[in-house]
Amino acid sequence: MPAVVVIGGLFCYPFIYGLGLSLQPLKGGGMFADYRRFWSDPFFRDTTWITLKLGLPAALINVAASVPVAYKLRRPFRGKRTLTAILVVPITLGTVLTAEGLLDFLGTSGWFNRILINAHVISQPLTLVHNYWGVLASLVITGFPFAFLLTLSYLSGIDPSLEQAAATLGADWKARVRHITMPLLVPGLAITFCLSFVLAFSVFPSAQLVGDPTGTTHVMSVEAYRQAFEQYDFPMGSALAMVMAAVMLVVVSIVMAVRTLFYRGATGGKG
Image (cartoon, rainbow, N blue to C red):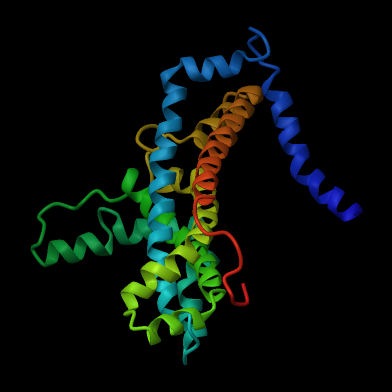
C-alpha cells in the first residue's frame, strides 16, 4: 500500500503543482488570465490545431500499419525474435538520433534527394524536412515500434482455436479477420491508439530538429517551453501544459467511449 501511495504521489504532485502554478499569472488579471490569454490569442490557440494535425495522423498511421505486420508475426516461426527486434530498433535509437538520421537521408543534400537527382527523376531537391512532413515521418518511425508491440501482444492473446473453428466451417482468411479477429482486437487497438496519440501529441524534439517550430510545427510543447524557459513566464507555460492535458483527455475519452460499443471480455487465449 505505501508503494501505491508513493507512485500515485509521483504522478499526482506534478499535475497539482502545475495546475496551481497556472492559476498564478505573472501579468495579473485573475486566476484564469493565462487561460483566457491562450484562447483569445490566435498565436497560442492555433498551436492546439497544429499539434492535433500531427498527433492524430501519426497515431492512426502507426496503429493501422501495426495491424497487418503484427497479424503476420502473431504465430511462432523461425527468426521471429530477430525480425521483431529489428522492427523495434527505432525505440533504442531515440527521437534525437532518428531526427538526425532523417536529416541525413531526407535533407536537401541527403541520400534520398541525391539518388533521385542522379536518376534524373527530379531536377531540384525535395523539401522533406524542416516542415510538417519531416515531423510526421519522425513520429511514425519512432511511434510504430510501440504500437506494433502492443498490437502484437493483443493479437497473441486471441485464442487461435476461434479462427480454426471458423476455418472448418468454410470461412476464408478474410472472413475470419473481419468477423473474429478484428472485433476481438478493436478494444485493444483503442488502447494502443490512445497511448500512441499521447506519445505523438507531446512531440517536442522532432518539432525542433526536423520541423519548423515557428511555423507549420509550432506545437503546444514548443510554445510551453518558450514561455517557461525563454520568457520566464512559468505560469503561462504551466497553463499551456494544462491545456495540452485537457485536449489529450478529451480525445482519449472519446476513443474510450467508442470502445465500449465493441466486444468487452476475454478473448479465449492467454491475454
